[in-house]
Length: 373
Image (tube, rainbow, N blue to C red; front, side, top):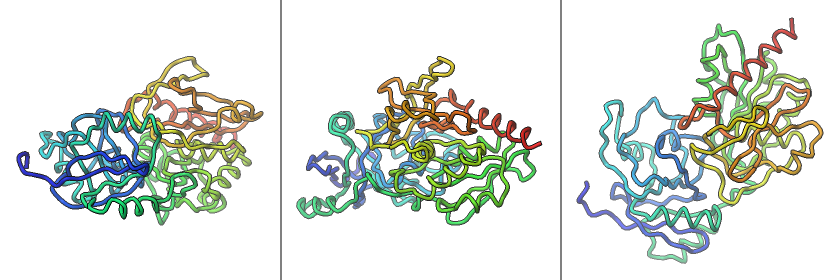
């Protein structure tokens, strides 16, 4: 495969900019989505299967991917979530005993179109300067004007509801039924690693579809609630916002992660906005304002919470801030059993600096348990 001629391919951005490359696997294909980049040096399989990336074309800034293949145990969802892949150098061979298949086999099985031999440094610089935008990957670019028209019809991420595309269709359980605590998870794109972290802390989870009401979740009599990560704009998720309002009104333990964090902000009347190019990587520095300590975190989001409105809110405290751009990275409600973070405490991939947040949630569950007695 190394010496086989491969089909020419392009990445066409919505502003007309073109980057030239070659199709991975020597096959024809076409993929649309918002182009974004992740700066992680490893963990590509977890990234490709993270529901938060649904509908996006992923650019890997690491110059070489694929050398350690793919493993069934390292996926965050049952199937790949990205719409396409862009990389510099693609390895068709893997050299890890734990791998079940090569990355190409994983892409083929997932029906993912990928192109390599792209100048990813130039592409990432362009996105950073001009912002995230829709794009198309294709080997079929003879009629550029027709391709541009197709691309123009792709919906913008602003106002786009995607939770329904990735949420479970039916409730399911995760963990040990005899665990001490029961946590109801509203699935707007939950990663498996989040459920694993809860289960390892003596929690039995019931995962509910994104459109489940608080009354329906409450029937299970959980000790607490979690609003998960997920893709798209949080503002259209009216049911999830109402669920957060209802949980807060009854002062039940509530933990929000990423999209769940934004939903909690909206439930408090704090607006969200689309970022210029988002935060996506495994080395984002955070300052914990309550301890004064720094944390390195895994992040994946294209929307953020309005800082001025958060700081002015009488019932909300900013607990964490992003050290690169001072955006809101965590909030806590005064006199309520509710907190949330913009980043991923479970990481996967990434550092474990923020694992303690799961322990804080457990502490809140214990407090609720004592109060109930």
